[in-house]
Image (cartoon, rainbow, N blue to C red; front, side, top):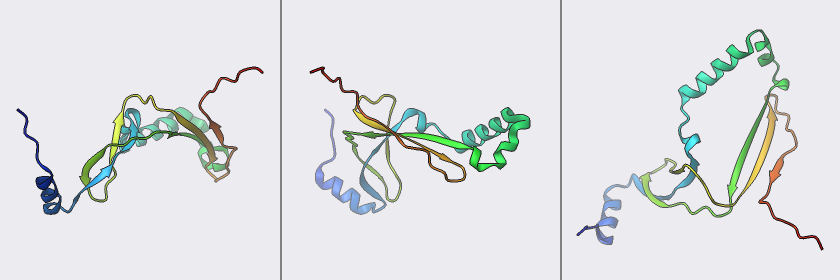
Length: 128
C-alpha cells in the first residue's frame, strides 16, 4: 500500500516553506536543456579557429546574421509542479507530438531584420 500526503499536509508544507510555490512548467527540448555556458564558449572558439584568416568578418556586424526558429505550441499542457520561488521550471521532452507554428527570424549583428518566415501546419487542399 502506497501512502500519499493529504491536502492538509500539503497546504501546511507550503506554509512552512514560503520559498516553494506551485508553477506550471514550460516545454523545453532535450537538446536545449543540455546547453551550458562552457559549450557556448567552446562554440565561439571553434568559430574563430574555423574562420582563420577570415575572422576579420567578426569586426563587421552588418555581415553577420543569426537565424533562430521558435515553435509555438498549439496545445501546451504544462504540468503543475513545486519549485523555488522566482526560478523558471521546464518540462524537458525528447520528442514533441503536439501541433505547432514555427517562426524563423533572421537579424544581423548590427540590428537589421530580414523578412520573418512563418510555417503553419500542413493542410491538404482539395481541388474543386
